[in-house]
Length: 112
Length: 112
Image (cartoon, rainbow over all chains, first blue to last red; front, side, top):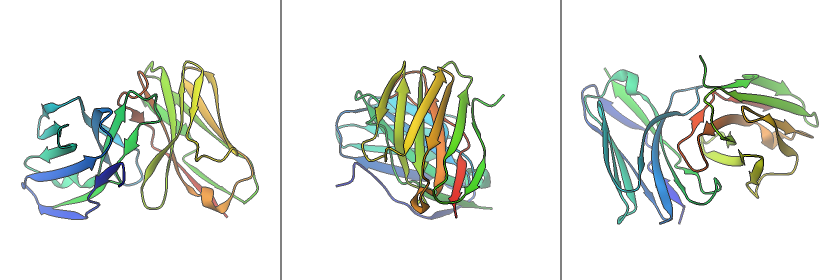
């Protein structure tokens, strides 16, 4: 079983749709849960992060962490064409950097 | 003002050459990293460097060596370049180990 699994997509939605992106993981030591957005030919941009379980909201974005199920989600409300990018989940634990793991990313296209 | 900057953006060179990539962060972070993103877009951590402590991913060949002249800089030296080294290399930094990271825009390395 891979340490972090994420549906690579591509995922195409119409403008204004609610987008749900998900990752599952196997290592229960993970404590930080992050979502990054990566545009073509750019570096990953930190969107949101959560420490331990719970929800976090920032504008149109909501991140959820369910440690009991080892499942994290990112919801994008009122999606815009500018949201078209690859979304990567990432996780880290108290294991000195070696335990920082990225999912493979989901390609999202929001169609006008 | 760019938070994490890498130079050069593009690097085209021949097999067997030695090259370096520079990275600087102005975020005042204590930890810096190097990642490799392959053609399938997987991001894999290569090194973590924190307070002069280097943590190496054991899968990284010893042809790759990070050098940190100070806390704000972490350069990557690569000896005897091979075809399989072609990838995008990202530098990142975080306040402490395992905390969310901020990325540069990458260096695209192509080996002829």
